[in-house]
Image (cartoon, rainbow, N blue to C red; front, side, top):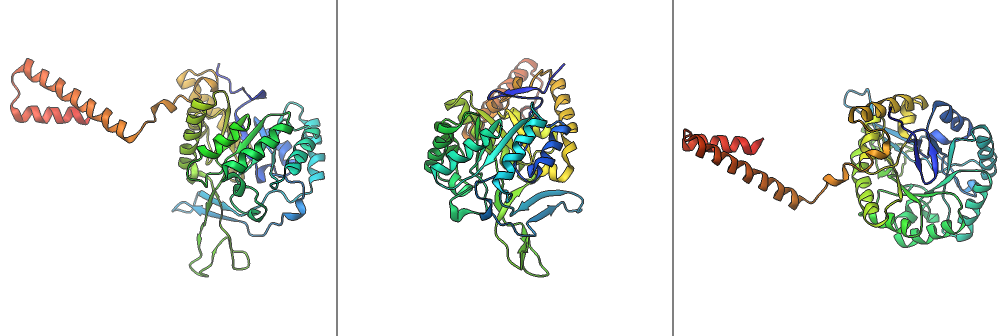
Length: 374
């Protein structure tokens, strides 16, 4: 029988489905619920040492609906990292591990460009019992004046330096979360792995403007009539996430074999998860999908992924990890492959004519063209 159980960077997960950092992991109550529902791991909402500097506004969400209005296909948020005091988080991490000793709890952390701050947050989170870290180098809005989030993750040099600070202090696995708001996502990804990070997470939300209200002429979400670009997520970003995951996984395979990859971006089903794993992911994260469908959505996703595995006779996710990477190439190579196939088919058609002797010239052209289109 196939199993979803997986081990990544020494962490044993009952399945590869992970709660992505954000509102679904905003406090102990919802994190405990996620473990009860059967999630493979939970990444808590991003924390920092001084939550007093984090001030959220309302409203902070905007949605893109399908044409019939029945489905949310795009979701923008301008929500910041956690505004809850750091000491409360430390207490809740300890209590979470007491309640869920086998549950994999991952701390998402973000700090300013100061070595002492990163070392302190790592050491204090480890003392509270977290199992691993995800470094948030990718939040696309808020706190850029403090050089945090994507403002840090877009600079490979700074990224490598900060990851080095963390790796010098951390005794638990460390993943660096990549921003998609760059030209070549391999560059910051490579920097994080060069610094020693065990793995990567990709992608965070895409910097966006959801739209303009044509009655008020104001952009949304409207806060006192004003807004700021936010992070775009949900189903609409999946093709972009898959492309970037493919690029990172290809780079890992060539330059850093054995490093892990956690994929996210529009995952809402077991079929979505299978595609990310086929492109080289060890685990998959769901955040907006949980906000749309509830924590219980993990059960049908697990069932659907198991059905896919059964269909193809895969016993574990590791057996099909990266299977589809081999089928990416350059456009020039696509042209070459198609030209060679058409030439081979026309040669085969000529052999038929030569052996049959009954086709007219027009019939030969017709049959040859038909073969070329197959």
